[in-house]
Image (cartoon, rainbow, N blue to C red):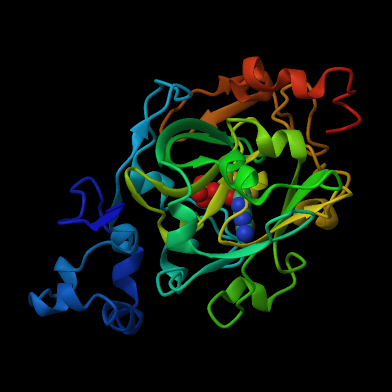
Length: 317
Ligand SMILES: Nc1nc2c(c(=O)[nH]1)N[C@H]1C(S)=C(S)[C@@H](COP(=O)(O)O)O[C@H]1N2
Ligand SMILES: [Mo]
């Protein structure tokens, strides 16, 4: 069996105070955790929101992992950009608690020989799951080190066999305003979309991601499936994907549509190209006081610099 239920909740996880504040919400959220209630759990004993992530995943280690200090799970899962839920980074952990991630289907379509709609289980079984410890650099200037669980997107691409017309891959997040309060406002043009050039999508670093810290993704981190592209700014890592479309032209992307002069299609981490409103030369690693220097391609230049040889990265930012 690929997956089994976790026996317990990691002791490292501490329920944030905000989760105690809304009792009504707590009760409705708790009804889905029948097991916890059956054991007579009271409010204080309620598992933290990572209970949604309590499916353990068996993984193999990856040589692509950094050995830098991991960002604690409680920080990764309580400081999120997920505008479908909230523009406040402390918001999604609470607001995504009742987001329904099962059943889940991902439609793979466009210029491929094998168009197919995958059930999540089926998608997860396409290749062995790896633990990949990657740096993640948000365009806003903070960074984390995250032990993701997934497999290279190239494994899926090989399976569906793109035709010669496939030049880019376009990704679409779920659109479900009934469960995603942020989608009831126009802060972005919903659904969230992202894209990669075919060679970027095929690069072994590009991870189709199902989990972190050895378990399925917390809802606020993009459950049940997202993309992680560690040499690009965090927003390229589109969450809660329902569609993967192989296309002939550079696809429109959510942040590029919202502010084309600020967020380019490529969005490679580049300390030499400032955002129009701030420098990108340094970053704050969550949990650290002093800022660090941001590395070209977020430190992944050996693996990806050749993808951009001859390109003016100031123009194609
Ligand atoms: N669908 C969707 N995907 C998204 C976002 C979003 O708002 N919606 N935010 C992006 C941004 S700006 C970042 S930095 C990362 C954050 O991922 P994390 O919360 O798991 O750290 O997700 C990216 N993927
Ligand atoms: Mo971000």
